[in-house]
Image 1 (cartoon, rainbow, N blue to C red):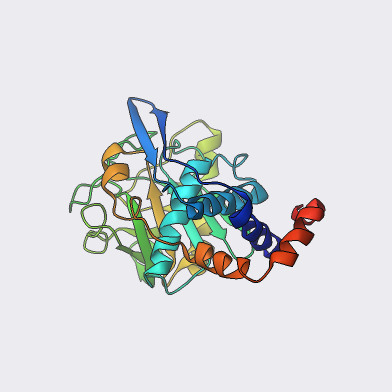
Image 2: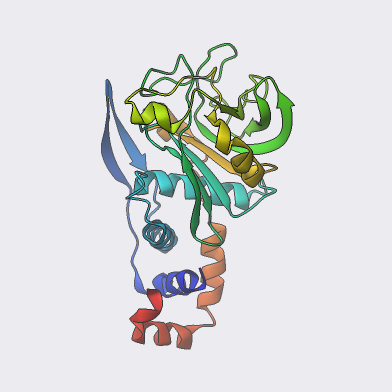
Length: 278
């Protein structure tokens, strides 16, 4: 990770700004245009370089996670970090609902170590769709999954055993998560055997249910205040989410910009030794 940070520091000086890009994403039965919010500043370039470096280092393309989803998750994490909304830093969980339920579409990352800690199956709400989730809600009794950034909270033992509550961070999209009892828990209707048989996962009442055998380990890793992101390329969400459309200085960018003022000689050394980036 130290090499990654050093490389990003060099990037502040060497790279020029990037612009917002519109991309079309195909989902069975639905096509939406997603806008990547990337301001016309050198800070955006540093953010992109940092995300790309980590994305490639972890090998996420081979794991089925797109760079755009990872960028969105990193931006939300940095926003929550900048606004002191995280009690547990360095951890990001992504539920990538643009993938079908028979894919391992739940990802848990350790950013400090640059590692993928968990990659497994996760259920969506029964009224969100069948194999693919395509409809989301913040309403009580909708039995749908919600979108956007949440924060993991406390654990408890309930009807589904060891479980973890979630608090929504985005008004109108998921701020009713606690009231709706949207929690992470283990379930026997979510497992690799169903995927191997070509069957979709069982569906929940909106909870991100994970395989029963993995639930406790995942929950203990991410509980008590880490970043949790439910993603789907929804036009309304991408265009109105305050987090996705926020223009702010990422904490990682601020620290790298500060470092760049004092490590000119180090940058020269790095550039003359490209093997250090491997």
